Length: 333
Ligand code: SAM
Image (cartoon, rainbow, N blue to C red; front, side):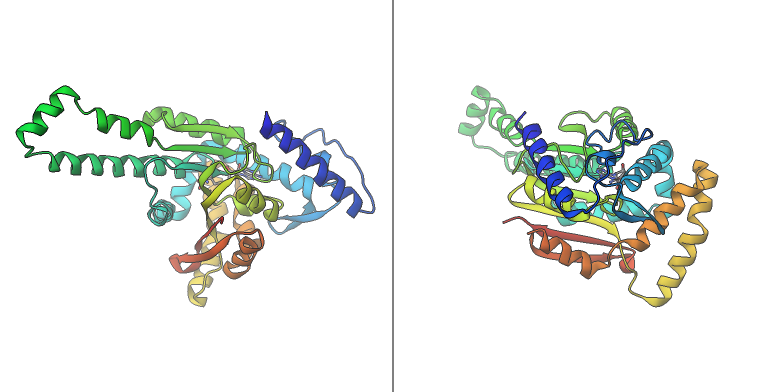
């Protein structure tokens, strides 16, 4: 309730600000506006007036949000297969690297924005679980040769301490995505993997997150932020929902640093990826957009500056696979 009131007031302030700033304010209700863009920036804020890019095309902001929605609605069923095919499985290593750098400890609350089919959250829960198992094994080893007094104590209060500690330090992951279809595929995946505890699925826009302030220890966004219309607003929202001391982490395609690798990568992505999209998912255009959107995304240093401008500290990045992907991170003080 508090979150929705806050959301509404933020939207009113933002709308007022934009109306003041735009000389022409036209309110257009798009009949094809997807129902889940309930925040519906398509008609609520003069978005139809301002232009942005959708891949290499110039479109209105409203149209971009709508077309991005349609891309992911269309690719949702084949999304995971295509990820493996396009990256030859390397996206798994990039995501593993994100978890390795995060090194989450039991009890952490993760918000995975633009979380799609849940890859980051599944890895997070697995990582934390294996940490807990490691601790439990270590404790068991230490208790292998207990004294008679310890044995008698353990008969009176069997494993109580361990259970209480595990319960109190339960980790949670929230997958938040604007696209219902992507979440639906993710939920099916969770069911087939038998993962349910500690995981929730929320429809929400990175630019107007449906959460209260200071809620999460870690905010992740993997291969999602380049699809967002106002990256600055998404970053501000990340800062708002993080707890003080919380960490922002973003995995995104970036600028390849080696010129030879850059040429090979360009040739591969422009000539192969749309073809794979057509063959595997029957969808050339969506994959052409994905390739073009990568080229429109700011380079490592520019994005680092944007994160700092949003108010995060100690911002740094690692290039992965020669800059094909960059992992940016920063902290909320
Ligand atoms: N994070 C997942 C992964 O790494 O596999 C999915 C990444 S997928 C390339 C991009 C996701 O961003 C899609 O699921 C799409 O629906 C989501 N998305 C695009 N715009 C968004 C927005 N404004 N708010 C939240 N999610 C958005």
